[in-house]
Image 1 (cartoon, rainbow, N blue to C red):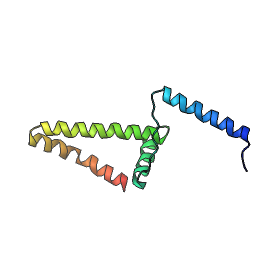
Image 2 (cartoon, rainbow, N blue to C red):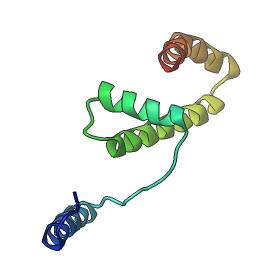
Image 3 (cartoon, helix red, strand yellow):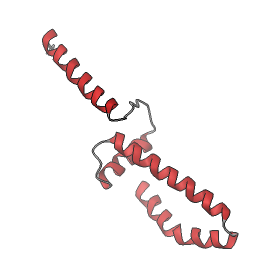
Image 4 (cartoon, rainbow, N blue to C red):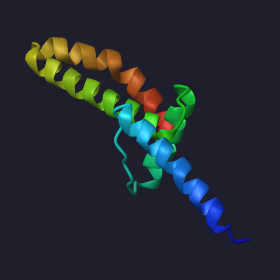
Length: 102
């Protein structure tokens, strides 16, 4: 069933209003293709962290990646023995994450 020109105009106006509200809130539009596994993880993250949509899950994933990078940089500054101790402590967490992604 084809939409009338009036209905199309109403939809365009509604989309524009939504778009402008997001832009005014400091958001930027991201439209991209991702691997199937990435899409699955974003859905999982959305569900587990109780986010509203995959855009918020993407923001969350980037924040987690930044924390991971900061952690790696911090580990590099430690004595090698201390760094290994911390990595051994984190190993069970890595195993849990690997299981979740399988």
